[in-house]
Length: 288
Image (cartoon, rainbow, N blue to C red):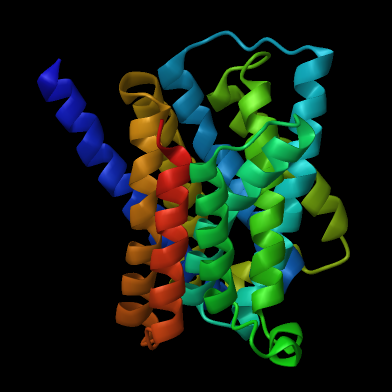
């Protein structure tokens, strides 16, 4: 049992590394093709990757009306997330985007959950939310509102809000459908929707791209999404949600490191300070 636990912890480290590197891969893709083509091919490759994963899990697929409602809603939000992240990273930094989104999403998820279900907050939770807002103020450089509105940070904030919605939907969907099946059907519906959106574009133009483009696209769709997400779900079932969630604090570190190493992006001081404060807020929110 101890060896199995250790194995899943190592796998979780790998998953966080893959997630962090996905932001650098997306930044590289923004230099080459249009947003509609990137979104379609990302979801298409992701759907193909889930086929062998489904075979390994070998669980019967059961769908009902409630599951379809969650799948449809999450598919729309996933496409919106890709659109906002593409626009944000094309104008901003991959490292900054990853830190802002990763640290804001849990805080916004908690706020949405408390508002929707009218939960009474403890003093520790109020303090945590204050830390989250303080970290966000520093991250987004809100001392200059005009600069914020003109920057890519507003799109990163929208990404965090969208992902908070995805998180709430995924938590409730587990009552009606297996998480792996849930992710698979989301990618299928998102592929169909993005195909309709990109139908007038030259979908085959991606085959004129070079090795750098395909490495980035395959990494983002296969390793940064399908493989990493599957590892996360598997580890969650073995180690528990609290342990697996704590590993997500490593995503910003890996994202900043990969952006610095591959894209030569400078690691800005306000991103480090604001990110650390926000991650501390998330840590206290997740404490029992």
